[in-house]
Image (cartoon, rainbow, N blue to C red):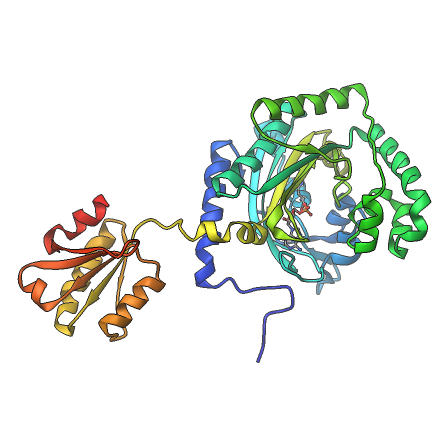
Length: 413
Ligand code: HAM
């Protein structure tokens, strides 16, 4: 039998409602903050990602799906969307039309990683990119948006970690300082980390090898920023404090992609285990210029939707509004039940009935399985008096109501 590829998953109907809820919440909140949707292709010229994410990163070195198409072009399945959005921003002169451009995206990304809980080869991100301003208020807005989105999904158990890599000059000084700190530990680090040390020491901090992680945890990393970058970072910290957003500064947050400058952040959800970053982002003030555009500062983030679902699993099951199941005790009553199902649906109340000839007991089981909030039972005796039984599934209580009042009754619940 043919099966899904390793690291990919079917999203089945019983799970899809959570995706829809998360996506709808994102669209809603992003619109409130003034972000507009952009949809870019899933395939791009591979050099887009090599140039932007950096050729010493794990994503480019080991994880990117790259193939030659029939015309001999080197194509990549996008491993992330920031580079694609930047390409689209430059190619379509979006900045000329809009000035500050606030964009969001939702869609699949591809990385050939070793699959585990919360880590897939085809996964989905929802993210924002605010392109065209270095105003620290924008950093605060983007962080706040991520924070508020989690709160709206009912996810509370998370930590926000922030750091600043500073401007280009600060970043190269940080790299030098980190090289000095890592050097004495090279013998305890894996072969790849030794290579990373030569190419880009910041990548040592992303190593997934548990032994390296342990060694890195024992090293102290300290940043020092120029006056302007330091003021920018202080502004963000003060604003977050003022707004009641708790955070921790963590100088180990350097991010696994090369394009970051100044503010970087990750949101860690404590219940996710090893793959605990549910959201990550930061500033990339040089990327647009490096990709052939004008000098344009920008900042963004991306959430992993699979990880959001793991974090929100229990909380999302209650998101549906009222649902009604109509049960019948005799086939002759089905046409009346069918009419009521349709009347409820006209009022935008999710309703259903039995189409499988089930007994009353089996219909009640089905209603439970569908997480119905109410069951309306058509029984011969009650029906002969113009009544039905209304059962509240949350507390099990039931009483008779008039059939003609059933829709109003449910609407008012
Ligand atoms: P990233 O840290 O590579 O950043 O990914 C962002 C989020 O995507 C992660 O925190 C995680 O939740 C999710 N994610 C990444 N890889 C996987 C995977 N293999 N399986 C499941 N989920 C995964 C970026 O992609 C940047 N483009 C974020 C950004 C936007 N920076 C600025 N703007």
